[in-house]
Every structure is written in structure tokens, then in C-alpha cells.
Amino acid sequence: MAEDWDEPDDDATDPCPECGAQVYSDADQCPECGHWFVDGEAGGQSWSERQPRMLAWMGYAVVALIVLWIVVTML
Ligand SMILES: [Zn+2]
Image (tube, rainbow, N blue to C red; front, side, top):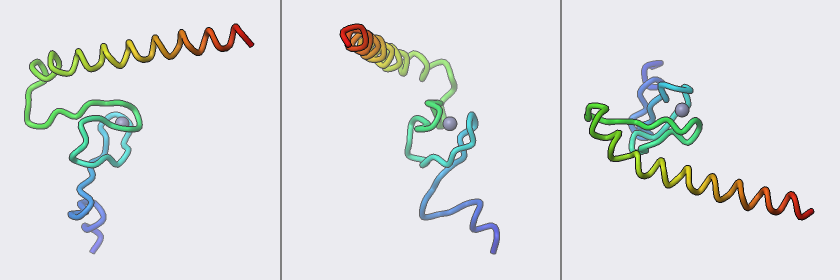
């Protein structure tokens, strides 16, 4: 039946609301666009929980950009 395609039980993927990519239900974040999935929780609480993680990622990004910049200017 065609319905099996929409809800694959063994894979358990959900389409990302942001980019439409098939993402595993277990995943917290879309690997394609970085959209965070909030399961069963209202936005407010999980936002304060995930914010430090996002700040850490931004820190990594800034460090990576600085390293990249140094490498590029040295060449
Ligand atoms: Zn996405």
C-alpha cells in the first residue's frame, strides 16, 4: 500500500518543518538546516535549555573562522 511510504515504521523519520528533509525521530536537530525539534515540550523551557549549546556552537564557529582567517592571510 502507498500509505507505508508516508509512515515507515522501522525507519521512524519525520519531515523537517523547516527544510522538509527526512530526519530520524530520535534526532534533536535537523542535520540539513539545523532546525531544533521540540517533542512534547512548549517552546519556552527548551529554548533556555538549548541556548547554551547554541552559544557553544557559535563560539566554535567564531574560533573556526579566526583560524581559517589566519591560515588564509598566511598563505
Ligand atoms: Zn531541516
